Image (cartoon, rainbow, N blue to C red; front, side, top):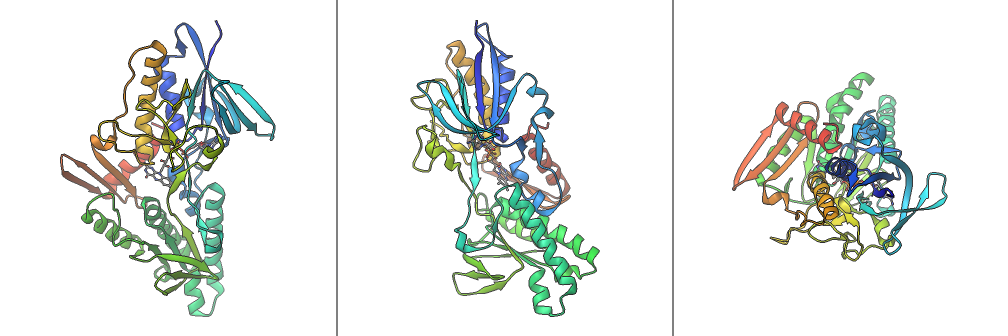
Length: 398
Ligand SMILES: Cc1cc2nc3c(=O)[nH]c(=O)nc-3n(C[C@H](O)[C@H](O)[C@H](O)COP(=O)(O)OP(=O)(O)OC[C@H]3O[C@@H](n4cnc5c(N)ncnc54)[C@H](O)[C@@H]3O)c2cc1C
């Protein structure tokens, strides 16, 4: 009998999890047919997107070769960009790494093309932390600014060169600003500059940090950030950065050497032309078992899919934590569908427990959980350890 081809589009946090879960649940076979697994991604390896700020701060490598994973044995990896899905003909069209147009047949397809980091308009200046290239560019720029500051005799200009603004105070803005401030302090000391002269501002358009949970968690985060050397400015809507000055909607101005935008995620815009049914926000429409509407054998999970808990109508957030649970469940769903049994149904993780963890530089962190109305906050080294576990779990390193 012919092999059954299972293609996974996207080897991000969730696609990788889906590959592992489907492979392990099905043990490589379906109704006596061998399953041939193909993972197709634009990138040559798995990018640890949650750690995107690391190469903006230091030199950490955040791309992991596909072959690193034991569950990758027997999987075919194709570097290519999927352009469209022909759900009638059961094939995908993609552009391979050499730019050639190619097609591949599937029996099962998992669409996990994720999200992209939101960019401001080009005339708003600054640099958005969107990918590995911009991360490397950010690091180059702040380090060049510090080297310029060494020879700068004008104290106002020196201060500007030693100032960074991070616009957007969600979790990625919080983590980016904390690690940046700590790394800049190290670099400044080695250059003979004065560490207290560094200023890292985290610019929030809201009244407080961490709108996902209680006010006291936001206050605690503010306190830890301040210990790292980050000043949070609240109720500040950034209009643009121009010629080294950040301009706010209230007319205030802040001279900076660099402005970094961390303004959240949007569903992958490539979905718009892929031929799958989409929500008005651009996420793939799926049923309660992640099956794409009107496309037999096609599933979609992660940031690119609109996944709703049928019991309470709550949509999952675009988070790795949510996507990881979806991937585990998808392994069981695919097995049940192949065997013609009722499949598991999506359950929102927040119906079980709210849980957020935030890294704030070596040995600093904050974990907040809420269950049955009870709040739990962990900080310091244990939170940092938990944070590292979560980062590793998200990339299937544990
Ligand atoms: C800086 C930052 C910090 C974050 N911190 C957290 C956090 O602390 N906790 C948390 O839960 N979440 C966090 N997130 C969100 C988390 O990263 C996402 O929810 C997660 O990456 C979603 O995984 P995914 O696999 O669905 O999508 P992605 O990680 O976006 O992966 C999509 C994959 O598809 C590939 N791809 C895209 N288009 C195509 C195409 N056309 N053809 C082929 N391949 C394609 C991409 O190369 C990529 O490998 C953070 C995000 C950022 C940017």
